[in-house]
Image 1: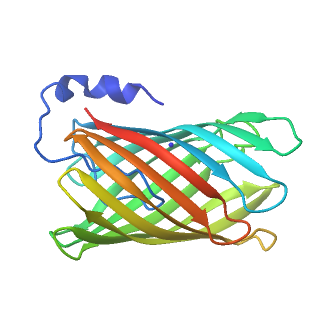
Image 2: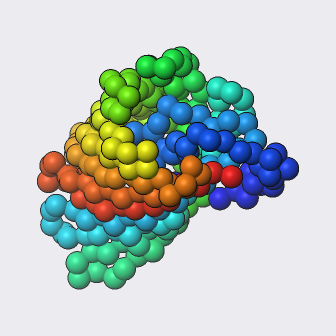
Length: 250
């Protein structure tokens, strides 16, 4: 989900940026998009999420600002700074706990690009900058392959295959994550998506996550996108959520 230096480095070039192409944001949804930001351009994406579980003890989490800053390094690559922000956890009959999420730095690089099919690599390092219980207290990598395929002018299928590693009780744990979905352009401004994703931890004491989520996007202008989405956990230990946010291009 930040480093203001990115803005300072790009201010001179941003002032002259103009494009008729609409912004292509990474949010909303679990799968990251294959699109990369052009050099001398910055995308700022922020949001809010309310999540709640399907099992006892009842627990809910407010998360904001879900911040992502993206700027291009070349025509094929971008650098990303991500910070989920603050988590406000509430468990039934327990005091509310507020904690700070870890900061992540990474980037994307286009492996293949065409009018119909795109393939992009993603790499992210999560740094132990947060506070308990939202930090792993370790450097945690994530790598992924992102893809999309244009079925028609108005319909695209997309997905991701990714793997991550994190620290759990002084032991290294690994996750395998998959997502597949479809997006539809209803008008030049209005779009929707539907997606299924799963997270499968290597630790046998942890449960798989399976969620189906979907939502709407609306282009306020070519440089500003609004979004709203909801997710439904398909297993007892998968959380439900409501999410909304905004993406802006400078």
